[in-house]
Length: 419
Picture 1 (tube, helix red, strand yellow):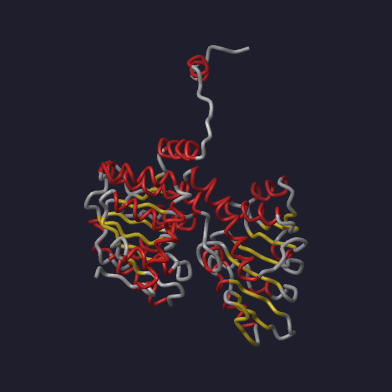
Picture 2 (spheres, helix red, strand yellow):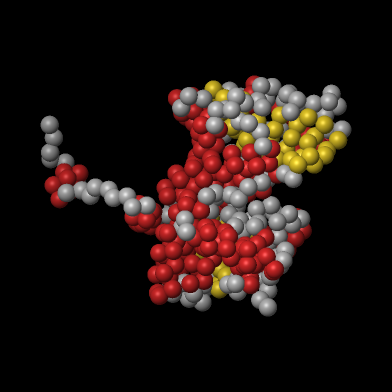
């Protein structure tokens, strides 16, 4: 048996059905997999991937495997793994997988160590934990790494900080910043799946509730949009004046978190920063307030501070921890403050992850082909890859668009024509 650490291999049959269902909504990735199977652009490349182990991720792993890659996979969050899918990757596809939903912190980092022991040539991160550990404690492996990709906003922030300090040791493509990723995955994927997670965890009615969205980046825009669509009264909090102004123009109330804290019924953070909801905010919340996070790390909520305030903490539903404060108020934290869309639900819909993971597959191919000419920097996704994915997605949806005529193309490249 190949190396692995999953909950139960007996779950593999169910996991196979799960990933096959997702595949039906991932036509772009399927087309890439068919080409990879013929061309083998990743032949013999050792890939260490640290991603949310879901049915969509499984289809990305199958695509990389079809391209000839030797993959080791671990979870990028302790609560995001779908155990049946992890079992299927091992039993059905022979992909070494190290992921168990609910794993403790020690197990989480032991699993990352296991994929690094594979001596990667290519890293694939969601949150930059693999890159961080490589640069901190596994530096002996760095000479063998030719490049990597990063899936999410939080990871890109960490990588750019590493580059800014002059310490990034190999080129990495910021998949998160592709238009076919952040404009769709972050907005429509996070928007729908976050609301799904909140509802699955609590079964509360959103209509008529005051719903506070912390941040107004692409993820938060999607959350605000979907909450509004379900009848919630949405408040946005921001530190960026342009984003705050945009939220106002989009029809939301905008105010500091300290002002929103006493009036919000449901709070969701999605900023990529630490202690967005802190001690002073919890202290002002009304009885029954519900708090969740949809950013990559649970540090967006200062849960230790809330725990120190509370007289009692009780798990009242599968993904709901209720904190009783000295004055009797109850505050509920969903999914231990981790990504609520994956902790309490199934993450983004497959159709939107189709584009995100198409970027991962094609950017992996790009790095392998071009690594010799790349500097130790964070790179954008090449525009031609972004455009090709958009075209493939439209084709798969049966949608046709116009093309420029020769006359129009000439006009757009000329300075002589005017009024």
